[in-house]
Length: 397
Image (cartoon, rainbow, N blue to C red; front, side):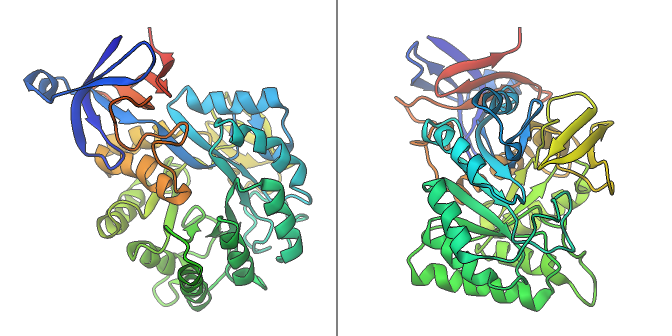
């Protein structure tokens, strides 16, 4: 038996206990009350974090056909920092099927929560760190073959709203239980609003439960918000406020200014009950690794001072942070509070994936008799312990 004391937050950032007791079997046997000792003790217990956009870590790139040993290494690089649930993201590839097939077994055994296809049906003018050779317009037969290879584990796919048959591709994704994720786009306001509305309408027609679409790293790889042409950013934000979309923010302090992270979190989150904004890492192989040379989708990447950029062209090539870093950085900067940060790293991602406490690596509420996933943080938000499925995965000291 082991006791953990601190203010316990559920996935929506609400204080639900003053600590918990785990039996040797890993199940919760007691939820402790919030008393004066706990109020003075400013440490925290928060649910395990969920990252729905991650290309790798620990020196390993998911899109570059990793071995089982390498896949485990990438998962571990994030789990050591409190990400108990992870979606493996690909990039635009000529043939993603071999990588999809290598990742499916890791989803089946609960080590991954799913697969995200970032491309290749994106704008050639907003490739970012994507390989332009692989970028192309949607081919529905091709997409169906990928979804079938994914065996239900492809959860999201990045598509530009303006490409031919974008909506038809979105419908096919929804038919397979996956979400279109609008991004890497040159679309204008009208094109974006049209596809957002059409997707909501189709989701209702087929009885799709939950949010029907997301936005891939809002602001990045899309036209900027302008006063006469607000473009896709305004439409995606408003859709998220209405509860029709979840917008991703790469909230690492590199991709977006922290004040902007706070503004969007407050504006969208207040209206959507917190479910409209998900912080993601967009992490690549260099997450948890020193500066140096890496690869993403076959393209050479250099990390200098913690920032990953393509060797050719200099575009930012994903993130190097882990999800806990987005919580700590933004809370310490004062742009969000811990409730908002936890909601954006647990509750909102869970809504995208439609997962609950019965899913390995996921804890939304702390229930007696269940094996939980949680992090223990001290008063400075330093990570002390990671528990996954009731088992101590990492502890300092």
